[in-house]
Amino acid sequence: MNTPDILQVKAYLQDLQESICLALENEEPEARFMEDLWQHNCGGGGRTRVLTGGKTFEQGGVNFSHVFGRNLPPSATAHRPELAGRTFQAVGVSLVIHPLNPYIPTSHANVRFFLAEKEDEAPVWWFGGGFDLTPYYPFEEDAVFWHTIARNACLPFGEDVYPRFKRWCDEYFFLKHRNETRGVGGLFFDDLNAWGFDRCFEFLRSVGDHYIKAYIPIVQKRKDAPYGEREREFQLYRRGRYVEFNLVYDRGTLFGLQSGGRTESILMSLPPVAHWRYNWKPQEGSAEDNLYKNYLKPREWL
Image (cartoon, rainbow, N blue to C red; front, side, top):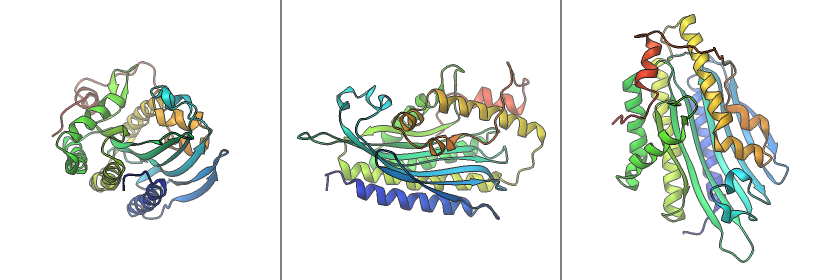
């Protein structure tokens, strides 16, 4: 079947939210996700789940949404002007996990489906998403492992898929005003429909299912590493970069706000605490300097 079936996608994404939340809770002795159901003003709604104050994760949000609208917002039609005037449905899972221990990287994943329709015209649809990793005190073996799992997610769909979507991730999660990447990257794709609905949906499921396979082993390896005030302060400083990217560049944040989405669910991606310091520079040869010199630029990890 190559006719787009948004209900099939929705069912998978709801199950994905559930499985990701369970896997993350397994790394916590006590903290659990709270659930918040909400309605979109034009139709549809979502299921936001947020975990706070954990021993492993200071804050994590895993959001499912399925929203409708009469017109796509400017963030969506800016690079697809032919879609202006179409009704739309958007369904997706988006998550950001901010760990407590500075040796565990922050991680982000997003998988989504858009359907834009107009009377007497064929529907326009596409898939998008990916996952990326933002370490504070990086380990090369973690970056290699993360990218190995990313490549595994892509391999059934062609040898060229991982290099293409890895490069797209490096280019998208780039803070132009800082001249640095947000982290060590991963996968990013958008406007995916060239393979037909069934194959594209299969790829979306592969990306969604591989996120936990990539992240949990890194969490387990690093969550008991000892750290002190210095590492915590650097983590909070670097979290500021995460805030800068999401509020200045991220198309998903813009789409959510411009389409009248629920602000609390959209901004759940922001860390609970972040710091900024004027003109701060790491000490030459320090562990913090290692992040800047060796990890905040595109690299071939495999």
